[in-house]
Image (cartoon, rainbow, N blue to C red; front, side):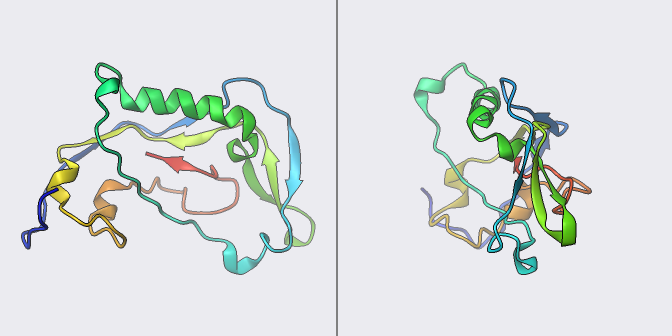
Length: 150
């Protein structure tokens, strides 16, 4: 990769409308109580993670977003609680309501390559705000998708 430049990198991100990706097959409807460790008020926040992947020649002719969407739907069959929503139960105790509603997915493209970002690509990543999109109303914890994938 190229050496980092002191000139700020300018690029454009094109996003499709957000959509919910549900499990590919029916999943159990149940409620799972969070443990006391997971239910601490100080842990009620979202974490933004950005991963970068190199171009894979074997993917030539395939839409990477469609491959991810299909794999995500298949994965949610086994990890179905992620397709649910957090709710507050008695005494404010958090519950994962396994509804199968799905996780938020946004297809996006940027007119920039990994090489243009330079090395090293380590947190804090300076362009994360330009690359990652906050869907209005999704920053809460309750009644929102548990995962947002772009």
